[in-house]
Each structure stands twice: as C-alpha cells, then as structure tokens.
Length: 96
Image (tube, rainbow, N blue to C red; front, side):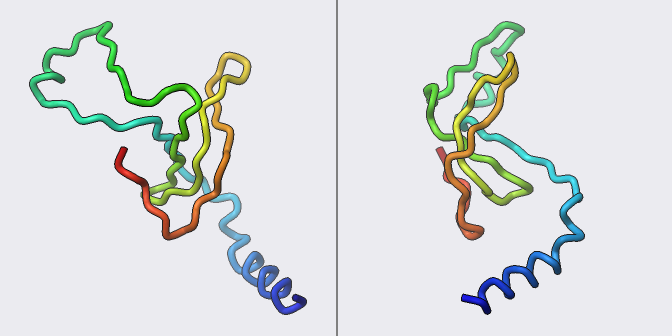
C-alpha cells in the first residue's frame, strides 16, 4: 500500500508541470449523417433534429481522446456538463 502511494506521488510530481497547460475540450452531444444534397437545402432557421433526448449521455473529448461522459445541464442560463463517468484512457469515442 505504501509503495502504491509513493508511486502515485512520484507520477504526479513528474507531470505537475503540465497542470497549467491549456486544453481544448469538446462536448459531443450527437452525430448524424446527412447527404450533401440535404445540407445544400439548409437555410437560416433550419432545425436539425438529433437522435439524442434530454438526459442522454454525451462525450467529453480532449484532442482525440475520450476523457469522460456526462449529461447536459443548465446553470444560470448557460449550458454545463455534469460528469457521470471518467473513462479509461484506452476507451474510444463510439459512433452514435
């Protein structure tokens, strides 16, 4: 147990210089395929209906890595994400 704590401390110390590095996070609500013909028919005011419903899980992505899943919430008239799951580093974004 003691060795595990020391290992975690050493790892954290080795990467602590990255703690203030800015990261671009994407929150992917849904994916949908459209033909180019459909897209060309879009105009201002067109509504694109997605297959997700309120409360469905969404993916949080940094770079190309899935880091977490959550759900969309509203906080003081702004959108936010409530994290429900931290993913394994090898887990990939699923095609919806």
